[in-house]
Amino acid sequence: MTAEPSLDRDAQQAWQQQPSEALRTSVEDLRLQTRRFERQIAWRNRREYAAAALAAALLARLFWHEPDTFVRIGAALTIAGMIYIVWQLHARGASRQPSVELGMAPGLEFLKRDLARQRDLLSGVWRWYLAPPLPGIAIVFIATVRAHPAGSGRAWPVAVAAAAIAAIFVVVWRLNVRAASGLQARIDELERPTR
Amino acid sequence: MPAERTTQDRLYDEAAGTYGAALGRLARGYEVHPDARRDLLQEIHLALWRSLAGYDGRCSLRTWVYRVAHNTAASHVMRQRRARLHGLVNLDDIEDLPEAADAERAADRRLTWERMMALVHRLHTIDRQVILSYLEGLDAASIAEITGLSPGSVATRIHRIKHVLAAHFQEGSRNDR
Image 1 (tube, chains in turn yellow, orange):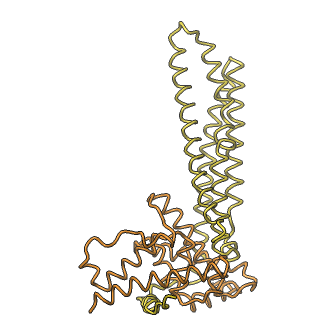
Image 2 (image 1 turned 90 degrees about the horizontal axis):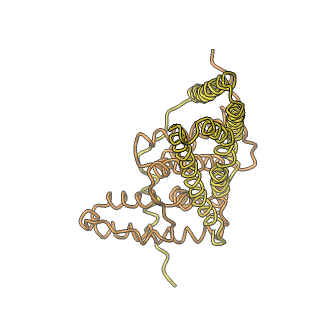
Image 3 (image 1 turned 180 degrees about the horizontal axis):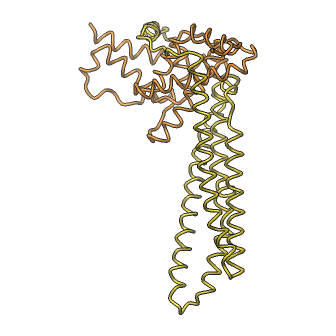
């Protein structure tokens, strides 16, 4: 049987006697910070919605002025996909853990829940972020290629642009799936029986 | 005109008064850079005040305060980890970490302490919660309530922590002589 080490008491003492870094703040300061933080979040959301609205306006212009029906269908579908993404971002932002959860959940539970939330966000990125605008974009590209036959010299740049966009989508998807696997491995580790 | 003080405000004042220094030490266990540490401590206080709006006395105020602090700090570590891309280790692997390159530097007790802190900063969140709670002098039952680990698991970890701490401080004390 090994003897119980006693010098760990030194460590506890040294830890508790280290110079204090207590924060000097007041409830009024915290109230102000909360309001400032909420204003920042609201401002960030407004910026994101404005960017989406601008892109939707450009696509709507295409929809109204483009004579090709396929391009118009593609533009309408892309707008619908963007609206879906913005709604998803809004819903996911609204469902974030409230502050009270920080005190209700013990560390292990909080950590697993937070990791699972991030994992689901990343593993589902294809479904809620990448896929929605794809049908519209694909139809616009196909319509453009149809409008410019192979011999016209304009089909190739369009095809290359389509391939580049597809490659970006695949890379983003793969990176997110890999990150989600890493998070799942961490959750598995936390759930091992020895924990 | 100052706003009327609510139960939430009074609980916060009590918590900050009683555990303010402990929260400062806890932030030190999660963040090594002074500026980032101040930000983390501010974040913990903000989270604590906001959380207390929902405090219903189901657990002690101490447990609530430590849970909020550790959970806020854990989220901070996750964000930092993504940014800095450095790996964390388990308590079981802590002895496998490389020794200090310069043996003479380890003769200084302060440096031994700093090295100890460097080890703490490399621990995974749950192990870090246990070691910091232990250093704060909390007993195994309280640590189990804060971390959500089983009492047996906490006891095993504390036993391991005692050996690790004793080994480091033994070395520091020997070198002091």
